[in-house]
Length: 316
Image (cartoon, rainbow, N blue to C red; front, side, top):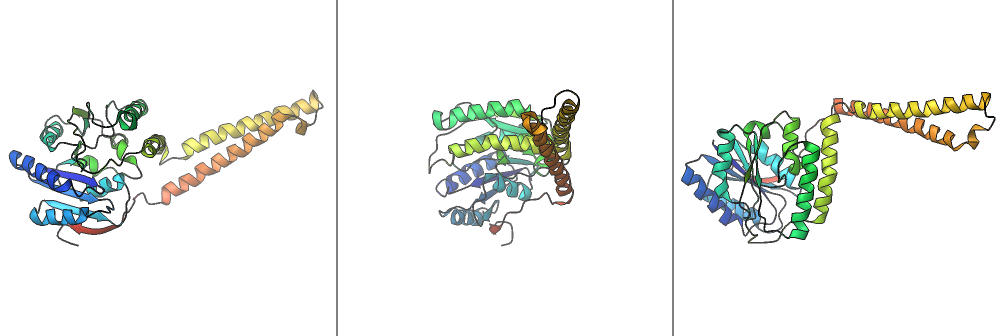
């Protein structure tokens, strides 16, 4: 199969028929073998009924329906697991991403050898205050921390080599950092393409300031997890040892000072309490690293999401 097109969605019933017809037109014009996987992330409108009807009309359209809202990362993760195409395309369901970009995105993976090609919405039609400025700030911070120089990490329109999506797990709110997840998995060739961005035609945006703040928290989390997931003792043990040795060294200094130079009682010196606190914190950090090692060796790594219904996969 040439292409798997994964579309996570939440309450986008109005846009789905138009989007699917647009994708089908592009697929037929380029003679691609394809599948469209629509992942309904707990919609409260009739999105799932629309997906079922579209699947009956076109056997290349498949659907997954979550029992509740798990988030975009979960939707992409399940879509990645179900995909069969040599190249996987992700796009939003709100008609702001153009299916006309798909042939060039696929070409950059197949012919240019990129592992991931990210869309860059150079000209946006979002509110400057609500989304454009936060997006620029977020992208600048992500480039600095990740070392991956893309302009638009959060663009939903991306293309992936099949091996990439089968090698990573997207969880929490980590869909923003799929290139970084891929980098940790050993992939290095990242491309970028300027893509069209259309004004929203139906419904309303799901973006909010809470997602913007969570994005930075997730960035800190993924950097930490990427470096120390399999060896947490390297972080907690190191700083725990440093803290304990600092406190122990200060305590020895105070003890020697009391017996040989200054007769002031230890408990009357504020530095004594800092030393005790440093040793206690160091011990706790070391134990946290030890427990982290035990958990990382024994806990399963997979996340599971409850899929209520499927359509187009040949089974319920």
